[in-house]
Image (cartoon, rainbow, N blue to C red):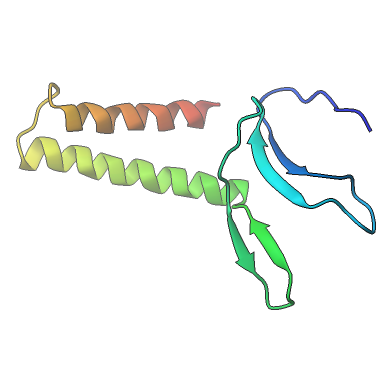
Length: 107
């Protein structure tokens, strides 16, 4: 089996062998640049198997939106309650994080 070309970013779950009755074992998860990444969490299931549980796309979108709302509250608290302004590092950091989230929403 040859490596297929996949447009855009993707995630590879790496095993040390192909699918079969004696499948290869899990090695790691990599991004499209070949870098090892941490994604999901290992959970022991009630049937005795282990699963690498990766959140669904919808769950990730919901988490992103919740993070954006939390960052807006932080920004508001810093500026209105504590009197921080646009030159403060914390306010700029919150706004930069929001900008990243907005960019992700457009993608």
